[in-house]
Length: 632
Image (cartoon, rainbow, N blue to C red; front, side):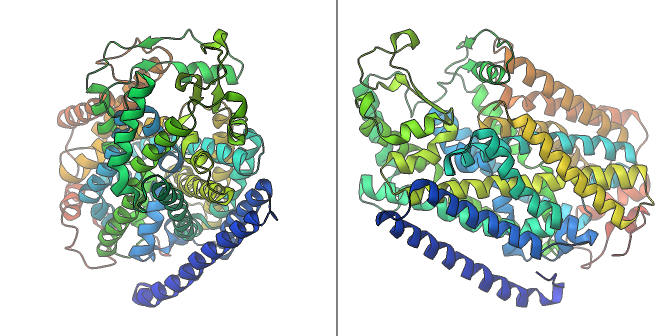
């Protein structure tokens, strides 16, 4: 795809609308034909899975090859020529990762009310991002968030520290996406989880390796189309089957009433609609230790703080404030041609994200209703084939044996069904008896969500190393060719390391993503906020703040992950950023006040940033700090 200039954007938008409109129609026709062939008995489940896999990966590869580039502007920021609506769709796909697609509804299924912290935090965080940072970041107009930190806080030391923070956050996040890829691939085409991880990553590399942010952006637009169709189709069919209404969001209340009724009839202690019922446990640490052959810690469950809101509120705050500090989302605002387009793209992205987030609670509720009503109470030897299929992924088990906690009566009780949260969205179409084509479409959508986010995160890791550390700090005279080569090498290294880290399945995908948000809230959020709105903040303060925030957050996270008795107010490891963030604020402010004020040119830069519409289009704020601006 050719890179358009600003003046030709309306023409380009029409071109894109036609291309992606045809793609959407083609996807619907393809799914319909596959469904007919399944109904006629021509295609089996594995063939359907491979067809959806080849369609999606092949399409991503085609876009990656068509968008390959050797220009830095295109490799890192898509030539700064992405229209607002396309950037909104790409941001939506970047934002809605495997955590949103396959784990958020599953977390709601497991936790009920307490799981709403994820939806409220992620949605509120995006609004916060739009209000606080998006126009200012775009006006600054560079390649990476460490670029901003380096210029605002005056030097390469702050840049390197922020680069390390960006790598840490993005690596944690991408590891969660790779876990999702392995789970989806194992179900879609029946391969082992670890093989699924490797095959899925090849799809990521085709886009991000060849074309950087340019290829990633156009792939993400297509991936958004796939994931939103894949998410809405099954829940609409479920709603129609269970309530007679095709609008699941309006039938959500009826689903909750039926869940309450069924839980009372089954005598369950878990109350789906009651708040703050989740205790602390180190079950994830035990499971991951077993998978890599280590001696697991002793099981500990802490219920001392059940019934209190602190863990819910801490997680909510970390997800919300961490959103506003995520580097792979922030750099999307560098890809649009102007501040005005960045504001518009935020609005589009919010709408595209809303479509899925407003549906996720209904998805979880319909799934729980279906299982309580039509699966629990069935004879175990007559359970449908999907139970055996998903047991192979390691995310489902049935323990009727009295030695394992069951009652041995051959009838499935709710407490004998151990089902992982990451399985719910993928399994629900089959649980509800929908055609396998729908299940394969959902898996393809989940794959699109995981790959789109993984692409963006790998670009962040590559740019942090190749641009901020290698070029800006170590080899300022490096050629453009060398810089792109280093960036591509870092994408390979980052993807390989993430695959290794994903092998033990450290926790639920949503929980691993929450770790990344905690790290972002404790590192980037305070220094970006103070950097834009407080001229007195300086480099020494920012470095102290980032290091202090990360050390406190990681220490609490690791301590509580292995031993839930190590906690403050019952706050779990996923909300650890609530302790690191105030430390970052305090250190940045105190150290800044105790050291020399920033130079006048940096203070003028801050003044200019706070008035995002007062500069002509194309003005580069690096000139205000005296930094050399390379021509591209």
